[in-house]
Amino acid sequence: MSQRSSSVTRNDLKVTSDPGMSIAVRELIGSERPATSSMLPVLLVHGGGGGGVPSFDSPAANASVAGDLALAGYIVYLIDIRGWGGSTRPVQLEHAPEKYSPAVSSEEAVRDIAAVVEFICDRLGVKTVALIGWASGGHWAGMYASRYPHRVSGLVLLNSLYGVAAPWSMRSAFEDKDHPGEFDRSVGAYVLRSAQSLLGAWERTIPIADKNAWRDPEAASAYARLTIAGDPTSNDRTPPSVRTPTGFQQDSFAMALGHRFWEASDITADVLIMRGTRDFWSRPEDVAALQRELTSARSVHLLEIEDGTHFLFLDRPERGRQAFIDRVIQFLKI
Image 1: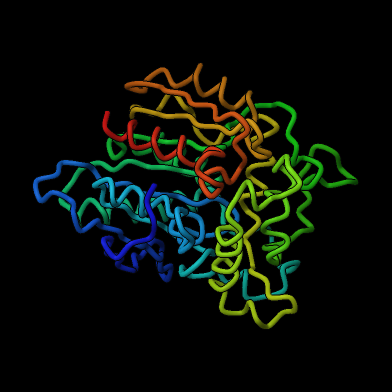
Image 2 (image 1 turned 90 degrees about the vertical axis):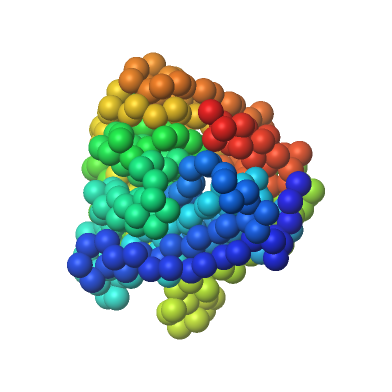
């Protein structure tokens, strides 16, 4: 198990996506990486909660996925999709949420990923990258991989939805109560999320009373703290909160009803599907459909992590984190 270490160099960069849209990118390089290493770069894509750094480069001990991969020899990149972390916030987020429709669509997220992938390829002189996407980040990464198959060497989908009509635990949270089967657009462009909101679902899915025995309390605290600190207006509200775009909620609601934003059969990379059995976001039906429809992929692999939560890579090593790290590193060597 690794810890956050001075043996990893971190560079914070900016990449232009759409005009006026600056995307925050963090680069991590291990100091002991062999100069002749042929390992391809890895891009980590966050979900709809925290951005890239809170999700994948936590300062808590044994909690940085990006640090683990950098120490394993990979050049690692983290992206903040527009509206998250250090990236530009769309104008919709600067006004009352009800003034606009849900902000940041899957199409916009994919354009941000495309811009960052091109930046990485130019920076390193490579032709392909590996993508690791968590939750909505898995959907965005899969959508990108289906459209730009020549740019993706490997794809890891963790706790991600696919376009399958099946029961979904989050449906009631997002459904218009007066119009069943429709997304509740009255939520507006964004929602405000406090630390309690960011951590609540995680805590509810941990099946023991002592949550700290399942996850390091500092890992949970850092995730919430860094997510909220990434919003420059967070301290204007009590308690402090982060503005989170709601476009991913609208698109996820549609996917859970069977809408397809992309076809798995268009992906040609090696693919690893990973799911924690206690995940509240993805469903077994998503895994089954992906396995069935990834017909053009070079290879398809599956790991279900018993009792793994939605946040399994931030849980304690024996609660799913180590299994995730070990399997990802093994997969990236293919």
